Image (cartoon, rainbow, N blue to C red; front, side, top):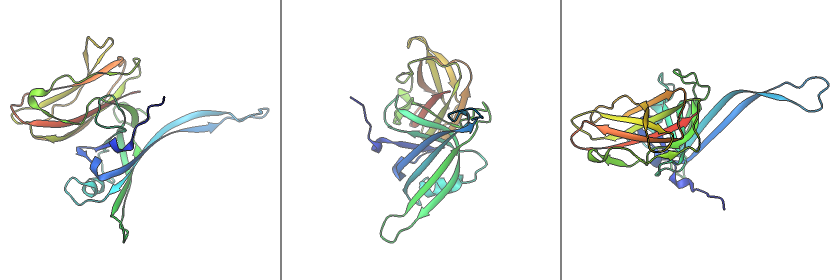
Length: 251
């Protein structure tokens, strides 16, 4: 029997904001250009693949709240720094699929009908990563966190994800710290990998996040990513809690 999922569990993270409660629809699309190579004497058309592209389209409710849909989406339109976006297709569980990476916001629209709620739409287009020069600024991956708030004393190794096979093409991971009340020290986040789900090595170490600050980061890695991956976090802080989301994609 097929395993279907309901769209109500989708989570949307843009930079340091969890915008899930402002949106009610998220569309992701992937495409590859094709160039025709059909020649004389051919009986059927032939093509070669070209550049990849991926887009994310979001729609939902307008809000003037600080950190709400309008404040965030209007501020990143045309921004010099490309936003970091993660769309978890079924949020709330480690291992669920996600689309993640850098993407320019190319359109932001507000609609105010006389007999309905004021709504917003936003479109994002993938941007080539300046570090890895990967053609696909957005990629399909998996969530390594469940999106819950974790007290400083409970940070550590989270559950692992089995990607079924290793990859030799590298990958990238996104980090969104949306709430942070940790005081007294920095918090460090890592992605680790393992060939056997037993012996672990650091794969990606994000820049340490200062006490009581939110953060967003994208980090790329080249070479082999082993079959199993997990997120781990530690802090020098003495109290508080932190809400963070990490996703990883293999190229």
